[in-house]
Image (cartoon, rainbow, N blue to C red; front, top):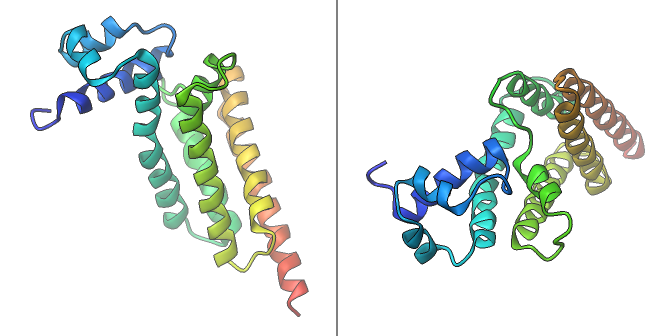
Length: 196
């Protein structure tokens, strides 16, 4: 922790608090206290709470995308199995007491009445990066119409996040993973048939 900059400490503190309790429930004072700094010091690094919320989501962007990549690459089987592995790993995570769902979706729900909020732009960009990355994986597997399929997978993923949060039942994530596996395998069969 000593080698973290003050800004990094603030973002790490915001990450812990915002993810655990929600952005509206956490004050700037609470973030400053968690980071071990004064409120004035926090405002030296972030002009507003809105800027801090955007930084919180930005800090989750690459680590989350890297986790998806790692789970996909570590999985055995065909592309459908690898996509389903992402859902399966998330289902395991959802069984932990500290799991609170997708920070991007939860934040967007809290900011639904503020469409121009900088954090919504960060969240939208994150979801688009996932879509592009998934489309690249599907294209590499020889599957045509990769972007529409990647969007279907994104819809299954975000829908599963929402329903698991609602019911507190991780099996919905596993069911969504099975649906994604079926979509990918059907698309792979169609692509193979079209190249014959």
